[in-house]
Image 1 (cartoon, rainbow, N blue to C red):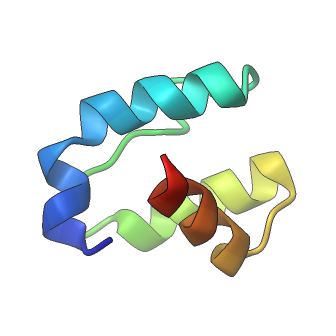
Image 2 (image 1 turned 90 degrees about the vertical axis):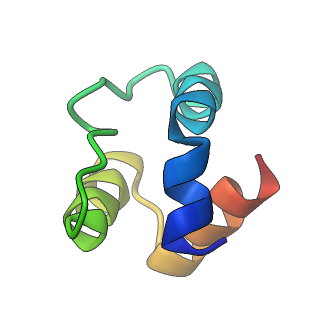
Image 3 (image 1 turned 180 degrees about the vertical axis):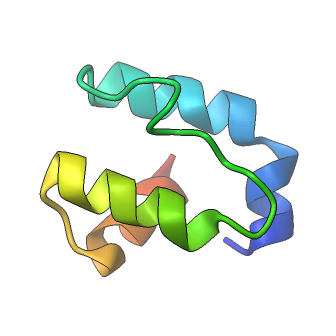
Length: 61
């Protein structure tokens, strides 16, 4: 999924991620333009997943 697609339905994706990973907060999922890598780094650290694993999880939502 590219950045444009991700931004287009990010609120829906956030809800699904929070349902799947209860430890995530809105701050963890803050997606600002140009800050995708920062957000992905926060998620990697909090969930203990690799970048590729996170991309797979988000793509599967």
